[in-house]
Image (cartoon, rainbow, N blue to C red; front, side):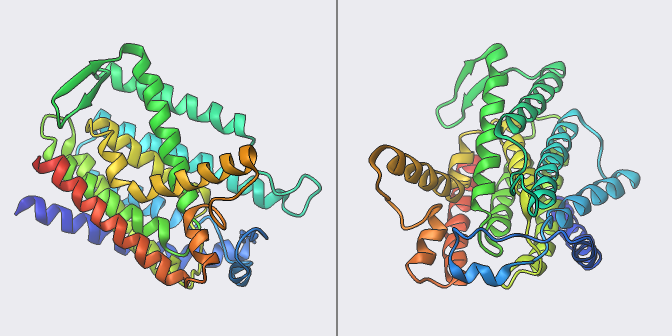
Length: 334
C-alpha cells in the first residue's frame, strides 16, 4: 500500500505543478514569439497550427525537477547516483533540444534558413552526455554487462558498454522526436512507456535508488498528464525538441539502469515503428526512387489516407498502451 500511496502522490504532485506551469509558461512563450513554423511538407490541415507556441517541454521538465526537490526537502527521497544520472541525462537532452529549438526559431526569418544545430554538433553533444553517463555509472560499480533477462544471459562488454549507452540514447531520443508530429501523440505514448518502466523500477530491488527511479517515472507521468491539458487536440502549445529529446533520454537511461534495454523495444514499439517507417521511406526514395508510404513517419501516412488527427492519435495510443502492458508483464512477472 505504501508503494501505491507514493505512486499516487508522485503523479498528483507532477500533475498539479505542471498545470500551474502551463498557465504561466504559454503566455510567456507567446509574448517572446516562440512560435512554431509549420513545414510545407506536412498535410495542409497542419497549416492551421501555424504560430502555435513551441518549447512546451518546459511544462513537464520544470515541474518534474521542482517536485523532486520538494520531495528531497521533506526527506521523502534520497539523492542516489542513479537518480543523478537520470536527472543529468533528462536535463542535458532537454538543454540540447532547447538550443536546437532556439536556433531554428532565431534563424527562421534569416538567410540561413530554419536550420537548428548541425548533425555533427548534435552527435558530439550526445557523445559527451553518454561519456559522463558511463563515467558515473562505472564509478559506482556499474558492471557494463548486457543482460537478456528472459534467458538469464549476461554478456560482459567492458568499455564498449559506453558505445552501447550512446546507441540506446541516440536511437530512443530520435524515435520520440520523430513521433512528435501530432497533437498529444508523443506525450501520451511517453506516459504509457514511463508507467511500464516505473513499475519495472519498483521491482528492481537490487538496484541502488530503485525507489527514486520509480518515483521519477511517476512524477514525469503526472507532469506529462498536465502537459496534455495544453497539448491535446487542438494543441495550445507544442512539445518541441527540448521536450522530446528529454523524454527519450530519460526513457533510455531508466531502461539501461534497470537492465531492461531490450524491453525498451517492446514498450516503445510505436516509437520503433515510427522510426522504421521514416528509415524505410528514406532508403526507398534514395535507392529505388519510389515511396513505400504516402508520407513518413507513419502517422503522416494515415493523415494522407484521410484519417482524422484525433483518430490516428487514439489508434497509436491504444497500441502504445497494449505494448506497455506487455512490457510490464515481461519486465516484472516473467
